[in-house]
Amino acid sequence: MTGKLAQIIVLLGAPGAGKGTVAQYLKSKYDVCHFSTGNLLRNEIQEGTNLGMKVKGIVASGGLVGDDVINEIVEKNLGETVGGCSIVVLDGYPRTRRQAEVLDGMTSGKLKALIRVVELSIDREALISRLSQRLVCSECGNTYGPKDGKSTCSCGGGLIKRKDDEESTIRERFRKYEEETLPVSSYYGDRLVKVSGSGTPDEVAQSVDGVLCSFGIEKRR
Ligand code: AMP
Image (cartoon, rainbow, N blue to C red; front, side, top):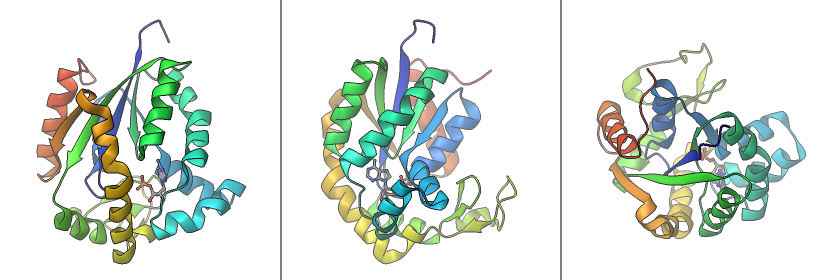
């Protein structure tokens, strides 16, 4: 890092609002690194680590992993990502007010990064239908909807339904979102910009481009 303050773009939004899709879009068009706590946890579970065993049931049931556990994983891994990238897209973290406070502590301390927040807002029933139909790549984590008409990922990996995309689990994830994550939006106040997540992926991408432009972030040349 060369003196310039790193920027962290926090993607907020209910499950299925399109955080993962927007993160993929940003990776394809901008010089950013993607940091997803959901992906970190799924890797731990897949590798059968102690942490993975500890969180497996919680992730499968749509609950939230405890703040202390998640903050520790982020503290352990985020520094490396911020050190290697001037713009980091944070997907799935923070999900509680406590996590947002810890992230502020990290970035005003040794990480030195500016936090901006993009919240994807979308109607609840549209979200439930979107989530119960979505497929993810078992290799790279890219997500696909029914309109994509794909049975394999562009990386060659097979597409599977995520265990936590079953309808009862989706409802639990919503309940948690409304209870724990909605207060995170108000915590960020004027650091947060809202974008409608209801349009087509191209329309959402265009709105996100506008927000990033207002942050002074340009597309890769
Ligand atoms: P995601 O891929 O972001 O939807 O995360 C999948 C699951 O991992 C969530 O439903 C939670 O069980 C867990 N998880 C991911 N990030 C967090 C977080 N910041 N706090 C608590 N649990 C999390």
